[in-house]
Image (cartoon, rainbow, N blue to C red; front, side, top):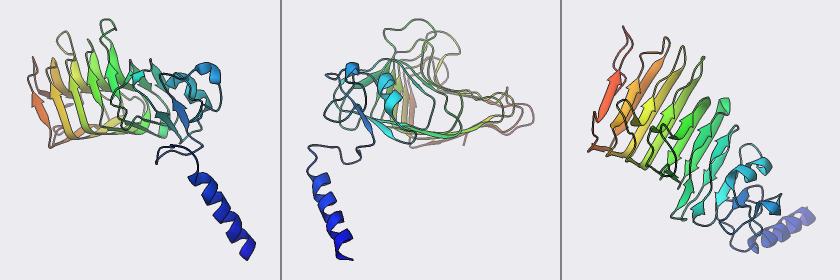
Length: 249
């Protein structure tokens, strides 16, 4: 009984000696840096990070995390499995556009990221959610898109749960009908959204909750401790399907 205890103690000491590994990360996560290189290839480790998130995802197991180590621009990204992208304490880790389409039963987490569409053209979107069970978005900034900032538009029978907290969405939209957040499920799909301490400022429409095209569950939004101000058209625009209750509470 003594030898397993000794082996566990030695392993604990070795893990403690790893230099500078973020507290939430493990050796199973992947790492990116503005000073990294995609030629580093797998495993995109802490001491040899890759340059782009899109490349690091090729070596990231489902359910694990891509950790952003330094400020910089990390291009456009597509998430097609349960992954986390975390940039705690980095101050400015920019993604141009993000598509989330992992499918039913999959969960995505985004934290500490800046989504900026200033270099993109007309109709550009920041975060587009197609199919996912849940998306958690914390401490992020979404800005400067001519189309939409965050879009959740599932179809089929998918019911997406969207949790956004401590996030600012501003300067989004260019024409009527564009908005900071657009929630518009199709068919029998649905969207449940909880917006907690969210700022929607200086957009065309701040929040557009559109249940008109949903024949099934539709869309339901809880808006809590948030600011909706300075939007050029409606701060909040809600559209229910015939016979359905209002989507906001």
